[in-house]
Image (cartoon, rainbow, N blue to C red):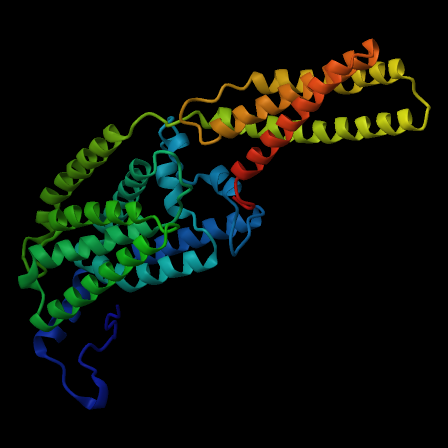
Length: 393
């Protein structure tokens, strides 16, 4: 989209004279809203948040999910658990400089026109309401959790508001301008939504949620540009817009289901898994050292059994108990993998115990049982690897 923001709206390429109605329209916009301050203020706010995020250690190209969550990214298991402030915070966070630049370019392009049509105060209100609405829609669409950030829900709300104005106040807009704006808006919406469906990383739910909210509020706040009582009409329409926004956000919030799983427990599980991996490496290293000493004749079978009991059986049991203290909810995405890890820890402990008993009792049957468990360990380990999340996720 491109809007003719010229100081002299009659200026045309080649010296041609513009349509008088079009000239009057653009001049009138500069009269009713001389200084559209909200759009540059919003762009500045988004930019400052991005600078602060990078200063805090985030990558300017592709910040990781962990830091985005700390700063307020929208994530259903946390948002629906009561952290509703994320609905607003996420609208000012961006996943890298390209994401920020694109959203701010569209906001600058379409925002100034919409702000002039509706007035700076109403425009700012609908921008924020659309941002909240888009993020609630994202929670509804991704109940298992997708880390969502960006002003696109609010920006789509601005576009929806422009479309709402064009539908309800089309007589205020000259025919050539109306046709151009409708084509531009429809083309952008079809393009942006289509791209959103093609690329899963794009949060189309936030786009459509913001768009719908913006359209409703834009239609309510729209007023004839040349109406002599235009200021008085805002006094009547703005409370109606506030009530409509409250009803819409309240309804969407009411539809949000309880969190699909306990994300705090999921985070605890990840810490315990990382700790288990470190302890496993230590135990296996000790095991190798003990086995090497036995081969070299430095340890008897009884001595090896004592060492294994202290340096393998005990640590495996302690690690298993810590893992067992983590109780993942039914909807946890890690539930299957964690159950396998628990089984893996049990097999490690049981194998070590059987080897210790076999060494002390010189029992070949128990040693064969240990070998069978070792085969199951390998099967479980391969299954764990197949369920491991991709690197960088």
